[in-house]
Image 1 (tube, rainbow, N blue to C red):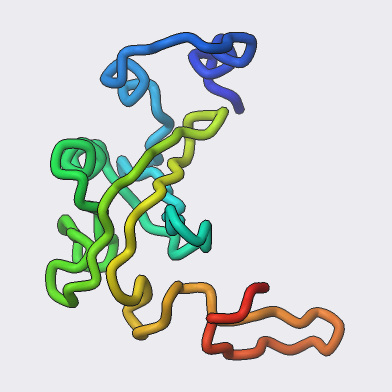
Image 2: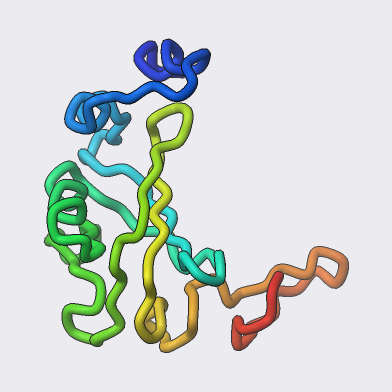
Length: 140
């Protein structure tokens, strides 16, 4: 179900809104999280899908370092904190329903914990009913 706040924005163009006000209207789930699609600002390759809570979102905006919420570790996850494979925020956008975020980043090193450039290396081949494990340097 669409959120009334975002429905009201559908007919607006070239308007400016207060960032804090929009963040307050985002549709965080029951766990207080929102999905974040992270894309390479230069290549436009989709790198990963992760989660943020309000605090990690605000930390990302302040520091420009991508800060997610780790659902498995239940703590903040600053991308590259241990691996050195950092993501610096270039731009951020909220989707039309306010229930997901798109971040364009400068990626340093691999985005995936497997060492691959991105996390989407399991290519579905529906015709052969197979999943192919790729080096993920090839486009889908």
